Every structure is written in structure tokens, then in C-alpha cells.
Length: 419
Image 1 (cartoon, rainbow, N blue to C red):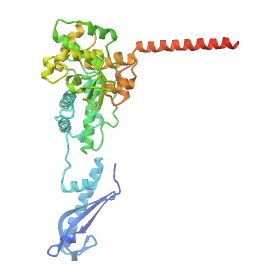
Image 2: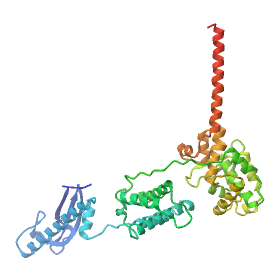
Image 3: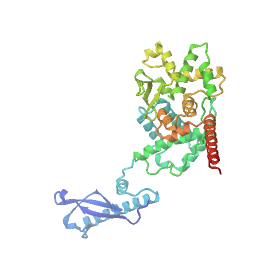
Image 4: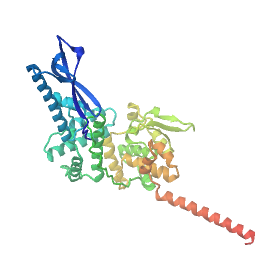
């Protein structure tokens, strides 16, 4: 926004600072009604001063008058430069420009380092490492496309974002990984936007380069295990204990909706006796910090009881013996192969299975499912869980019976009335 026709300067004396008959001169800048003053590093005797101007024709008067004229000219030049650069004109900006005080410019990579350092204790490593991955891609983009090591935040623009988007979409990994899909690209840009929002809050950035950019995620059909797949998983007996143990912990998540991190950190104090005198799990979600409560189904209780004497769990003060994330993912691939399940077994899949096959498909209201999953919004639950066709079919069969019964009663009443 340009502040045209609101700029003015004036000179005044600070009489309280008079020394040896001379008073320091200050310049007052006014922009849009806002004022600021600073010393011009000159003093004058009262006999040469009249209502903000130097009077007289002495050498001293002429020299001082010319000096103040140059001060005004320089301030006006800085004012015009700020307008030309489309910068916000403020009294502070004009004063700093005149005095040669540069506004500290924060860089993009500086922002990313600051963000990741600030949130290192507030985010799970699994989430934080994704921000480091985004930072690495931005570094590569700067080096390969812009031929720069870094840029100032003020250089961020809509064009920068769209070019980064195209770079990510066309990026060819140098290892075995696949090129990025649309949603992966959007997640990187979403993380960048969150970091830019932090810069705006810190007043490091005046305008939002994402203002006209819209993140476009593609809706994905979130997978889950069917009743038959879950049954196959439960009934399979593996020759290796590590696979049986990994399968059990995964099935436990299918019947409780807990994430990997929540199962890993599950401690005896999280198992409580509810108002129904049954055992429940009560905890706080790692991601949203929302509290959740889940009544323990017999299948989940059986797994807890199976490992209550487990040395590994007892040594760690945990309810269940959970392998590291890396080992768990590797073992789950073996489990899926041996059970002939052509789905990627992840703990996200287990949560989806709990939400659909175990709860919604068996008539549990979506509001209750949302509470057990620890969601902050019902909309989130609607994304994670959908009513499966089996449940829909059962509901429609009940409706058919109800309509048939209502129709029969209506027919009998007509016969009795003789119409």
C-alpha cells in the first residue's frame, strides 16, 4: 500500500538539551499521521532560529540552511525509493533509510533452520524428519534451478512456489524410490507454507507468497483390512516368533485404533477400569494431544494377557513388546506375504481397519469412533472411515423388512374397515 501525499518533514529544537548557548536540531518525519524524530547532528543558537527555519545571511546561517535542505532532499529521495520498490512506507523505514540502518533480512534456509529447531521438542521425529526432507528439496531447487545457495524471504513469490512445485513434480530420484505423486508434492508445499506462516507471525515477512496459491490434494481411497483378511491374519500361526509377535501387535492396533507410537509407548498406567468395570485404554494422542478412551475388546485383551510376562515388555516398562519402526515395517511385509494379503500393512491401515471393519461396519456410531480415535473433528473421522458395503447392505435389508411390515399392517387395517 502506497502512502502518497502523507509525507512531510519539519525541523525543531530540543531546548532541554541546550549547551553553551546552542540547541540541537531534530528532524520530525510524519507519514500517515505517525511521527518520529531524530537528531540531524547540528546545533544552532536561538538568534539564528525562527519557527523551524534558519534565519540570517551569515556564513554560519547559509551553511546550516543548505545542510538542512540536503537532509530534506535525502529524506524525500528515500521516500520515493520506498514507493518505487513497492515497500510499505513508515516513519521507521524512512528514518532507518536516512541513517543507513538496514532492516534485518531473514533468509529462507534461516527460517527453515529456525522452524525445525523451535519445534524439535514439540513434534514427533517421524513428523519432524519430513520437514528436514522438505528443506533438502528446497536446497536442491535453489542450487539446481536458481543457482543460489539461499534467498531472502522478501524474494519469495507466487512464481517461486509454482516453479518449486514443477521441480518437485518432475524430480527424478537417484535411488530406487518412485517419482513424487501429487499428494507428496502438496505435502512438501504445505510444510513450506507452515514455515512461511511462522515468518509472517514473527514479522520477518510482510506479505504471504501463498496468498493466491491453492494446495490441491487428490482424495485417496484409504485402505483397510476386510473381515476375511483380518481373520486370516489372526488365525495364521508362523514358525518364527518375531512374525507372531509383530502380527499380534498389529492386530492389537486393528482392535484398538492406536497408532504405532501409541502402541509402542503403551504403559500399564494407561490401562484403567472404566465405569462399566471393564478394562479400557486411556491416553493422549501423540499428534493432536487429544485424549482418547477405548474399551478393550476381547481380541485386544487376549493379546495383552498373552504378553504380560514378556521379558522385553517388562524391561521397558511397557504393556507390549514392540519392535522398532524399521523392524516392524520389514516384518509386516513378511506377514502380509505369508497371509496372501496384497496390501501394505501399516499402522495407518490398522487404524482404518478399526474405524471401518471393526467399528462402523458393526454399527458403532461415527461419533463414538471419532472419540476413540482421538480426532478433534468429525470430518477427520469421515475421511479415515467409511461405512463398508456390507453394513450398507444390512441397513437396507432392515429397511426393506420395516417397509414390508408397515405395508402389511396398512393392508390389514384397510380390510378391517371394509374399504
